[in-house]
Image (cartoon, rainbow, N blue to C red):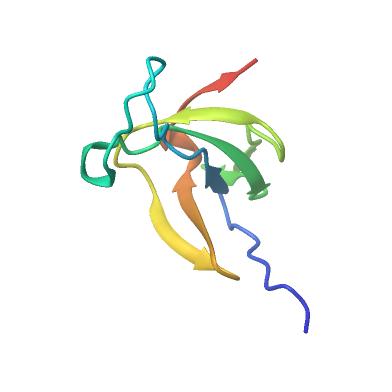
Length: 97
């Protein structure tokens, strides 16, 4: 059985969120209810870009980019037991280099 894949359309990207830290640097364990929602992730797939007023607008992000995104951005999807987000490129705040 092959793994399912998602190819984002237009200016959408498929992102694998980075898990929130489970412990503080001093070793205090953070309960699930107090964890910050992750705001970093890795681009797994990027759409082809969008067409606006007849002009194609290329994507600024590509597969493999480490990104920052808004706290409540995207739509959560589960694929083969893994959690991902699909969001518009405009929800991405920046690329981490």
